[in-house]
Amino acid sequence: MNVIADKFKEKADLHVAEIKALLKEHGSKKIGEVTLSQIYQGMRGITGLVSETSLLDAQEGIRFRGYSIPELSQKLPKAEGGSEPLPEGLFYLMLMGELPTEEDVKHLTSVWQRRSHVPNHVFHTIDALPLGTHPMTMFVTGVMALQTESKFSKMYAEGMNKKDYWHYTFDDAMDLIARLPRIAAYVYRRKYHFSEHIQPDGLLDWSGNLAHMLGFGDSHEFKELMRLYMTIHADHEGGNVSAHTVHLVGSALSDPYLAYAAGMNGLAGPLHGLANQEVIKWIFEMEEKLGTNQPSKEQIAKYVEDTLAAGKVVPGYGHAVLRKTDPRFTAQMEFGKRYMPDDPLVNTVWNIYEVVPPILQSLGKIKNPWPNVDAHSGALLVHYGMKEYEYYTVLFAVSRALGVLANLIWSRALSFPIERPKSVTTDLVNKWLKGEDEIWGE
Ligand code: HAX
Image (cartoon, rainbow, N blue to C red):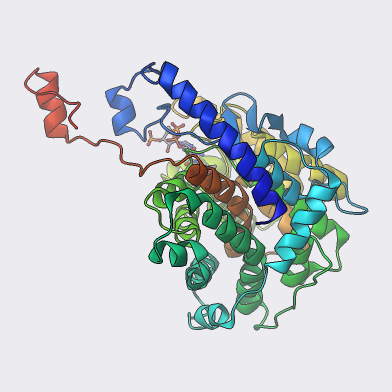
């Protein structure tokens, strides 16, 4: 077994004992109560999951193992000559619960380089799809084709002992994370660059190599952007659609490839990760309609009103949990101020940030009028020449692997059972309201 796995196992054993003791003493304590509105409206605010890697506070935003994004940008190791955190370090933190040393991060980079080979049938499978296919469909199809490599499913078929679930989940997770940049870059070059593929550079870090294979390897700034991007999109606690889906599907002991692919199909929804493409599409359409790439705040306000009047959402704004500006938005804004303060599109994103919240607030029904992570990311990519906005969610998906797979390893190490909440029918709810039936069945 490798160094990281050994160290993880030590930590996991301690944590298993801690949870056992906690449940023995406090297992019957109640956390909150469930209302009918919560049952009917997306289970908001119902605590029903354990996700060790990060925690979301409605006011403060995300903390990864207790560290905020500004803290992480100080404390996580950087690439040589860079100032953005390396996502390898964030993965280590999420998995181990402690900050990595420079050595730990270098080790992880080399482990992922060693494991990064993608078999040819994956590329052939992607090539079999029509060129018009959405990049997320190509990406997830590639991941599904890669499932042939799952060690977890092979070992399960051979009769694996329960105690080894975590180990083969770990192995699959490491292989999958290592291989995702290649699949993601393959999709991009196939769809937008006449299948002129770029071979990986074994000397680069995980995100630097992704930037290189996408075709932006000459730009130090783009590599830095990828490091920031891959870090801030990695995890957002356990209940969001992508993280929850991976957890749910993994709980059936579907292997990490199957579970991750399922979650990324959820990320591909416009109310979740696809919002990053929707934001740029929406801004480009505004610019085209107005005939300018520098719309005034008044023009933006009118466009927002029109969007709402047409029964559509303003993409990149609102959140199911957050009630303040997303610190992931702020981190990207700082990157923009540092590297491209005069970029017209980035300035439009900042003007939208001034215009949208008061309008949304005035409607009186939107719980969070502030921008989320997706409101900013596309403009930074466009600045470096990546204008193909349909591709953006693929980048989000590569990053999201870090959080959801670190969690999946923990879920198997903690022997979490198959997830199976209770559902009800409205008929039963009505009977219960009349006192004719008991709603809390088995
Ligand atoms: N524009 C217009 N209307 C909005 C809105 C927005 N940005 N955000 C919320 N609303 C509306 C809802 O559609 C809902 O309307 P109805 O009552 O008519 O159905 C009402 O306001 C109340 O919604 P809410 O309770 O404030 O928000 P939800 O928790 O239901 O939904 C969403 C949260 C993120 C899905 C929502 O804010 C939204 O659709 N935003 C735009 C899409 C977006 O940016 N998604 C990305 C979110 C972050 C993420 O997951 N990134 O990957």
